[in-house]
Image (tube, rainbow, N blue to C red; front, side, top):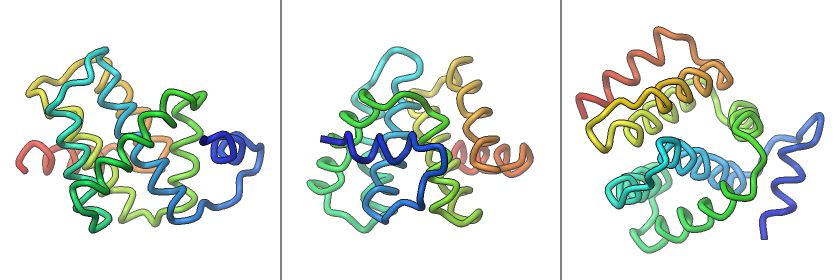
Length: 145
C-alpha cells in the first residue's frame, strides 16, 4: 500500500513530499514515538488522533483513518531517519518545532519520560534540524499543555 512512498523516502536524493505524503510521514513518526517503549497505549492513540485532527483540520473519523494508515506505514518503513528527512525537506522550521512539540505530547501521554523515548526524541530533533534549546522549550510546552 505504501511501497511507493517508502521507495521515495529511501531514495538517495528524495524529492519533496506532497502534502498528503508529508501528513503520512508525520503521522507515522508520531506512531513510531508512541511505540518506542514497547507499549502502544490507547491514550497514546487518542492523543495521536487529536494531534492529527487539530494539525490538519480533520474530523475524528478522518484523523483515525490517517493514524491507521500511518500505523501500517510505520510498520513497513525501514527507519526513522527517512521520516525525519522527508519532514525536514517538506516542512518549514517553525512547523517542525510544532512537530517536535507533538512528538513530546505523545511521549509524555502516559505521564512518564521513558529513556527510550527521550533518546529517540533527541535524535529526531537533531535530524529535523531542531536545536537542543528549541526542543527543550517544545518539551516544556508539551508538559504544560
